[in-house]
Length: 145
Ligand code: UDP
Ligand code: MG
Image 1 (cartoon, rainbow, N blue to C red):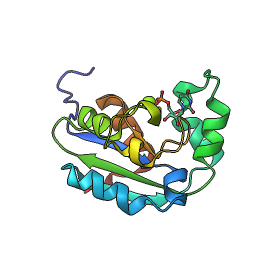
Image 2 (image 1 turned 90 degrees about the horizontal axis):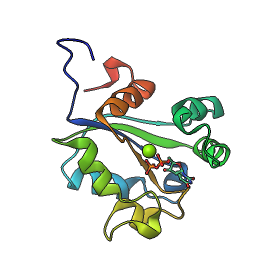
Image 3 (image 1 turned 90 degrees about the vertical axis):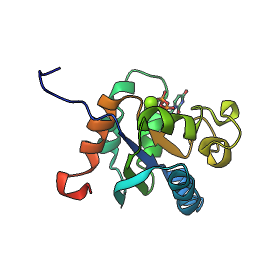
Image 4 (image 1 turned 180 degrees about the vertical axis):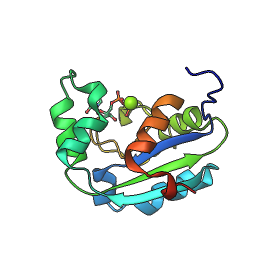
């Protein structure tokens, strides 16, 4: 890491995935997010191309579920957002719950809204570094408030 470079620690990146959008859960999920104390500092309704999804999930390209994942993530519109809160990355992962909704804790977004391990309603960054990379993938500086 560069000297004098201060990693932003109070932001995370999320997507409401195509399953949750199609099932009418945008409002319910945004309500859970804001009620938990996250401030929305950027938000966009869009659709990933297959190429966009392959680039966004490049870290998973060798995993057996990659093809299914990128096809699903480009299958319909998503809501992308950057969220701000103290300890954002960890607190947001706690709010969304485990990747597999069957293992997600009661009250978590995935427990309530996900349908399967693949179609699991929301994305949440797993580190401050990835939050910055993923936010920059979807938003220009002037779209972040
Ligand atoms: N995924 C899947 N099958 C698996 C594991 C993951 O389809 O066995 C999908 C799922 O949509 C998940 C995404 O790939 O959210 C990224 O996987 P990761 O392990 O990073 O889970 P997450 O960080 O989203 O909880
Ligand atoms: Mg992940």
